[in-house]
Image (cartoon, rainbow, N blue to C red; front, side, top):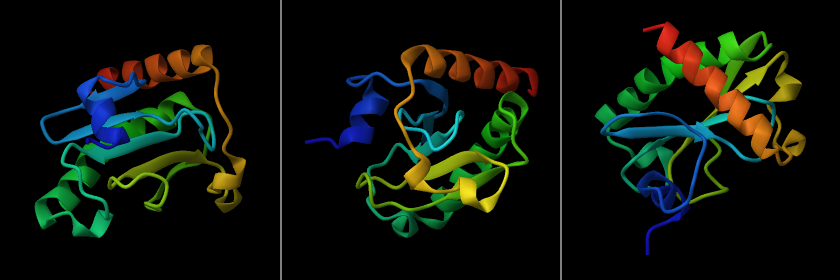
Length: 133
C-alpha cells in the first residue's frame, strides 16, 4: 500500500502544492513550525533520505533552491532553514522552514494551520516562485 506522501503525490490526499516536476513534489506542511513551512519530497518512495542516489540527492536540493527563495520572499524571516529529520513519515523529505533564529527550527513549535492560512501562504509562495522565473 502506498505511503502517505505517495498518496499526496497521486492526488488521493489533497495538499497545498507549491511545485512539482517529474522527480520531486513540494507542498505546505499542514502542521507548520512557522508559516510557509514546506516539504520537498522525491516521487520515489524511499524511507531514509541518505538512501537516495547521488543524482536524487543533488536534484532535490536544486529543486528546493527556488522554492526556498520564494518562501523567503513570501514570509517574513531572516533565512529559510533546512532540516532532514525523517522520523515522522517513512518517505525521504526535506523541511524548508522560514526562521529568524535557530530556536525557530523546532518541531515543538508546530501547530495546525487553518485552511485559509494555508491557501493564502501557498498562493503567495507560488506567485513569488513564478515571478522569479
